[in-house]
Amino acid sequence: MAGQSQNLSARQEQRMALQPRMLQGIELLQLPAGELVEWLEEAARNNEALKVERPQETVRPSRGGAEATSRHDHALQNHPAPEAGLHESLYEQLAVRELEGGLHDWVNFLIGCLDPTGLLTLSDEQCISFAKEAGLVEGEELLGSAIAVLQTFEPSGVGGRDAVEAMLLQLDPMGPQYPLLCRLLEDFLDELAKNQRPQVARSLGVSLDELEELIGDLSELDPSPGRSQCDETAEVIIPEVLVEACPDGSWEVDLQSDTLPRVSVEGEYRTMLKDAEGELASYLRERVRDARTLVDAVHQREETLLRVSQSVFRRQRDFLEDGPSSLKPLRMNELAEELNLHPSTISRSVSGKHVQTPWGVHPLRWFFQAGGPADEAQALDTVREAVREVFADEDVHAPLSDEEAAEILKAGGIDAARRTVAKYRKELEIPSSYRRRRFS
Image (tube, rainbow, N blue to C red; front, top):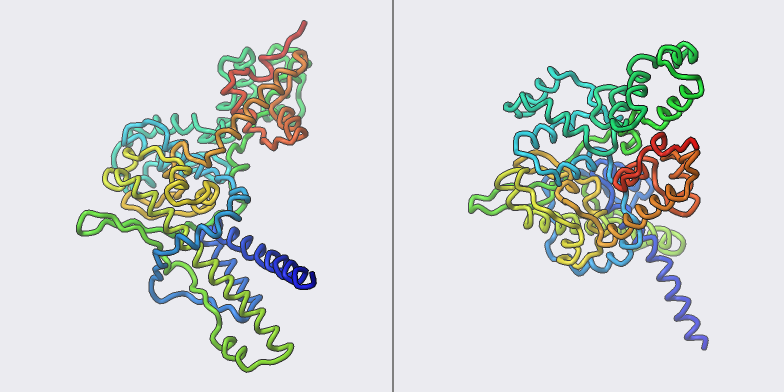
């Protein structure tokens, strides 16, 4: 019995030691290059046994790590991948639009011109000038059409030239109050800010109560539609994957490892550990073990990213040959089956990563059309049905705003943002609150 108890205790200690390693691997896998650099440098400051240095040449990870990847996969699948940011979300939406080549290229360019709030504040002249600098030298006449296409993307209001236009884009043109709401936004915002409501009501020909309802409708609009999907600080884009044409007509997909630090165990510490005894030996052993664990995690991250990238471009060869118009539909679960990984591992691998191709630098997530984990569609259907039920149960004399519906869903255990509720409400053809209101 004593031996069994000792064995059980040893296994428990092993599991407790393994969990932080797995969590560390998860964290490193989803970090983009810039954040990974900071993470590793901070880790080196906290562990003198870890050596971090910029490599002098590109480090090519081994191609034979599929078995090691699969050992980590079970832990990775239980941790949700981070949500895509504004630009990645817009690139994904563009990927599933059927646009002719020139228009597609202009919309792709304009996405990169949006400010952190999702607004296109550049003038037409600035857009054309920057487009020429970026190599987009043809199709200036498509600028207006490209802006119109971009303004149909989610979140509603994205691509507005200023905050007022962004809010105008969020209005329902078929709504009975649409003309009055447009006038409020275009002509009376200053008066409303000064609380000159009686004067505004007289100018519009409405009662004060009707004006309050209109102002309530305006409060549901977002003057910065993209801010909620943007990081607070902009990151420098560091392409971690490079795709180049080979002389024989094939394509080489590899990591640009020269952009990242090289990590290893400090040789001096390994030497000291051989001769150390007592508490010093325990201290050095723990430091060296932690450093080795981190080195393995970094190599594992590189291996997984490389395998995923190679699989992506085996399927997107037409894009490499002919450009964005030849991008093929691709789902993350397809790659998961091929690589024997969980779809969440694929999602985490591509999150925040960029690839340099003959057609420019793109987020790796952009190459997935209608992609996502296999169970993601089912989860979205669940949220959509919950949105339908919330609005079906509302008081028709006091209909719910999208924000109020989001709060009800949250209280019921479904974390859906206001913009998500608005998106599904429109898909379900449920009118906005002022169109659903009944007065008798």
